[in-house]
Amino acid sequence: MSERAAVQSRARAQAATAQMFIRDTASEAIVRQALQSLGLRDAAFTSGNIDTAISALAAQSSPRLLIVDVSGVDDPLGRVQALAEVCEPTTGLIVIGDRNDIVLYRDLKRDGVVEYFFKPLVGDLVTRTCNMILSGSAEPQKTRTGKLVFVLGVRGGVGATTIAVNTAWHLAGTRARGVMFLDLDLQHGDAALQLDCVPSHALREAFEHPERVDKLFLERAVIHVEQRIDLLASLEPLADDIAPDDGAVLTLLDKLMQRYRFIFADVPPAMAARLFRATMPCTIVMVSNGTLASARDVVRWRESIGPNTAERTMVHVLNQHGAAGSLPDAEFAQAAGQAPDIIIPFDREIAAATTLGIKNAKANAALTRRLAPLLRLLSGEKIEASRSLLRRIFG
Image (cartoon, rainbow, N blue to C red; front, top):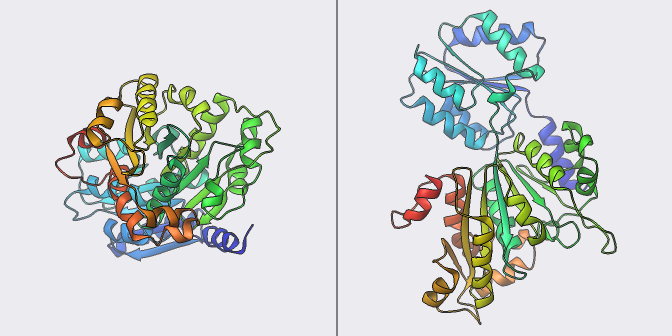
């Protein structure tokens, strides 16, 4: 493990087990008593409400137990959803407030909140719920899961990995999302190279022995790139016969979705067709360049994957737009069957930066600007009114 990764790992390990953002002293006293009765000493109390929590968690790791106060908040459900964007899915969330509202209670439970208590708090109920979260027995069916993003290059050289790596990096950094990057090409993938990391054999082990993949395995196997972005990548010998079982891949993805806000999976074409037929909710980012060959492959992949569904959405990113060999826009749209959803123009400055790894690419303003539409879509932010297709896709 590099020195930087070791520092990041220690910082994560030192994160508070429980954090509370409570407005009134009476509620705080009851929660303190509940945690003391459970023997928990690693708890941090902050005077504030859910907005205070959102600001704090955007800049730090998430705790195992989180209690937030929505008293006096006009749109508590909307603020809880905003909190979920900066909070890891593994965090058990308790909401307290001043509204005895059964509709609000049901909406919060549906959004993954473990429990909602209205004031004045009842100590025994708070203690019991905190214990469920800390012991890991809190209603697993209510656990919030992360967003799975498959990134597929319709052919080699279109820049799919570069787009995936930089999008994941910016979501983790500027959007403060917890991100796992999974490079599913075990023999030719270069995500680790772009992220300035050394790949390990852990990913191959996870696929060959899926029964061993548990919380401890993941904590030891992942490469901590930065505070909010982790990596699983291998670079296996070319002579080895490696064909990960689809079931093992889906099992790993399911486990990762319980731990991270976003999971980016860079998928080689040989594996993509099988994985995309699975019913797991996902967004597929299909990357092409502007050549006739890419347009042809876009059509073939659309036919293979099928139309968008409530569970699976595909977005076409036209990369390197305007580079030598590209078709005119109208001809490309005709050859591909429809216009791309997002266009990233060819830029020599971007091309030069991306060959030097993430340290150079992340400082490249041109690349950040070109990725902005994709970042907005994946993070659920509002987009331009003219892009009606994307509004329908991401709401």
